[in-house]
Image 1 (spheres, rainbow, N blue to C red):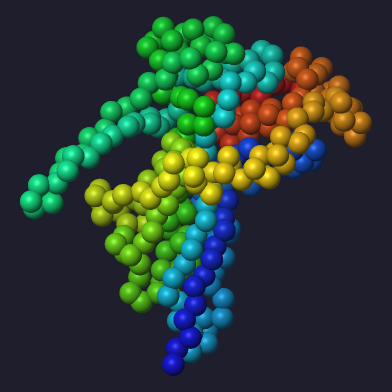
Image 2: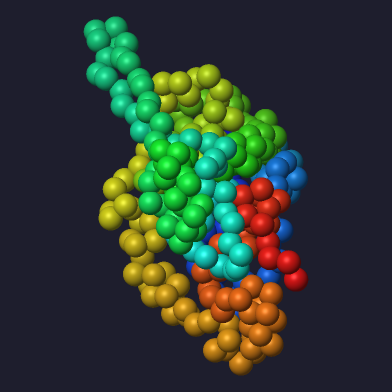
Length: 280
């Protein structure tokens, strides 16, 4: 009899989200946060183990992954002068609906792009210019144009590492695709669906739950919320980082805060396409 096995892969497919404390981010390089495809996705995807044994058969795989590259999570102004691109994220979020199918199961799906207003008011004149143009494609946490390539590479890595060991290979009909109910999470899963199953996803659904009842959502885990809010100090108030804080202020004219990691990540992971780093 064959022994069956289910593999579990936990990978960092996109830019990091919230939760890195000041003390961590100051001593951490940002390279792996950006998940540049395709090298990162393939190297981060572990192969199944012990499948050389002919008495074992891989019957399933669970892949847990983060959202793709995104815009700032909230309205920030991390240094002076401040210039962040508010006009185009390269992707445009949309809301859509599907009408009930007829007797033959045929329905209609449609989508309408979103344009955002008053998302980044700290950007002053830039915000006003975006508003005058009728809004922006960008909103806090919005996926950026780097995201599709990240999930195309992730899909390729999953197929290479796992699908070739599964007979028959997984299909859309026998795959559970779940995302937290946020634009960046559901959008990331949309791109992964298409990478894995191509045109078959035109009639696919994404599984989700309301944020308030979703165990994968931050607010559903009080201990995680408490831990993340435990250190909101500026770098200048921490003895081990006062030298860094002084050098940061000379260059940026701001006090380094925990949330400023988001600005560094956005600038670094888009090669300063969306946001330029300060000189110095």
